[in-house]
Length: 364
Length: 88
Image 1: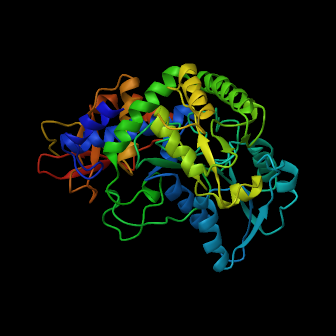
Image 2 (image 1 turned 120 degrees about the vertical axis):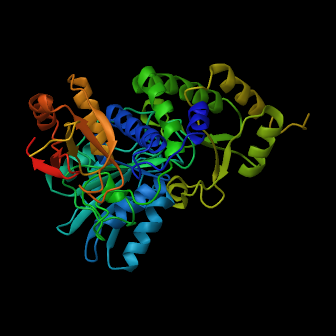
Image 3 (image 1 turned 45 degrees about the horizontal axis):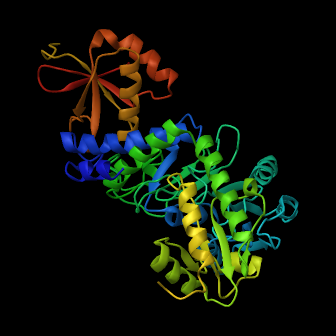
């Protein structure tokens, strides 16, 4: 991935803006990445994948592009601020928001989400797996129920894209957002929004697309409709390389390996006195994020000691999801979060657990 | 009417993604082609067009129709530098 980014930055042209060789190469980088996203997520039409800077921009585009004053939206109490903040802003503008509470394990019951649907419900926004508790949410059941009632659905797959299988040919979700730099293993500054054909959406940003240049109105065809201005073709070239790796490996294989590592992590954490782990006990019911606390030590201090003593880097605090922490009872102090990925080994987990066992001891 | 020496058929699409998507499918179907800058006389767009040999029009039509990638327009160059609008 890093080599692809390096190669791309040495030959970057503005994609779609010229017919010269560098412009075409950058345009091909975008095209190849789009085709790989479509293959990864089981979609026949790659033009429906719009590149964004990250999942936050994708979620903002989806929420603000679909909702109008008077609409009702249903979401859950475990959403990231990249969902909650745009929704609160829309609420100020006349959108009604229902937040369905999750259980103490961070899981939202599908029946509770579905029972919040009203006649005016326009959209359901739901995270696929919580970035705090790791809890997988019942998106299949909710999307199916919403689809039957003609309610649009938006899934925040920031924690699961590339790590948990998602098949758009069987899951009738209307909008799917993800970042490129997490499970998709791409560089920061990349992300995407999938918009199913026929979903009415207005662009968050209008501007130059290289197409329909004679008109001062935004094109309506995809991906140009939602992609204005010069794109991060250098970053997307890196994303294309990481997508190729994921496609070769298979998301199912990656998922099975991560479930084993999360199981090892949960088992090890459960045997350390004073450690409390949050989220579902079964690794099959979670993504790879695992949140915990060490009794009597601030999460930030736990993080600092882990880095110093074992070189394990963790994120401590509220993880931009105050609601997610309220749901599992860890607000406002937060937790420490570790997230095994495809390059994590069993030995790496063992090193981390060993360092955590000695967290109360004097530093070396 | 006099044709230009290179009488390839120029296919204009809505955007760059559609051009590259058409290129992939046409190549896959064995249609020889070249990516060219969009002639300014044909559209104000900044990007690309596809040129195919005129005698490959029929397979190109079939491939692009199947892929729902039908071009916005097709043109044949004339010797005087203008283009005739033709059907694919």
